[in-house]
Image (cartoon, rainbow, N blue to C red; front, side):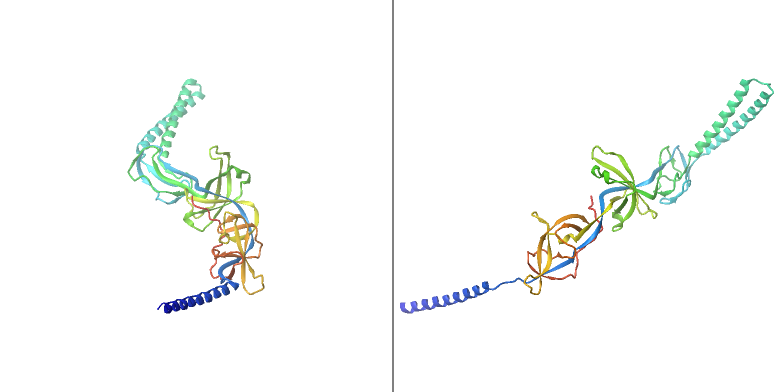
Length: 371
């Protein structure tokens, strides 16, 4: 029995040893081979030089060149409303009339008194030429005429103040009074804004003051019209720097013939500098941003002459950004093929295969962040 068990154990040990020997031999053979990982699919682009406008970017607010709340000057009942909310008006167009029946009655009385005063004055003037009355009587008649005519003018001015007209051309807002309503002096009637042209007000740090000059091109965008750019000119620079923020207030003027831009809109503004810079440009997706340095992967042929492509990691110095593009100050030359997609698993000298079916965004239009 013991002999049989010993033979069984020896056989088992021999079988296990043979299996281990075979596996070790296989592992050594695999390790001896030069293993090359399969190539990674990447998206690439050719680095190009582009001319970049130098801009100062900021945020601002649109404001009307002329904008007021039309208000009554005197109290009285509204007897005529001659406008519709939101309508366009020209300078001098009638907006509203208040009741002037009392003033017109007073005007008739004042005009009668003025007519009598003129008759008395003319009579006194004729007698004075004949030296048939005193100088004092003549002066009294003249003063009475002047007073009567002044009273007529005052009543006419009061009637005119109860007739509201547009002081300038523009677009009306929403009516704030109703027909038959008794309004007090200074009561709001309707807002009126001149929309063409329109201002954009913004501020820039005092360090930028020397780069600003009246007449520079200004481009703005507003959230209401996404993707559109509106162009204007810098028209005013505040001579005083804000002592609290150390910013200087700046104003630009833009054409607005269709009235789409409205006062109060939030605007993203760019002041275009006259100097144009030339940079090697890549999409921002090409950059691997790291604490030890920013890098890109440049696509090159294999060094051993074999068919296929590999990537070389290249550290770069990154410059300004413009939309989804970034300027490369050093590290990449024009014409080099750079990986812009599929960077996650890449290492230096990794084999790659190019698949440019889908290209990442490379939009040169700057997109300022919302505030």
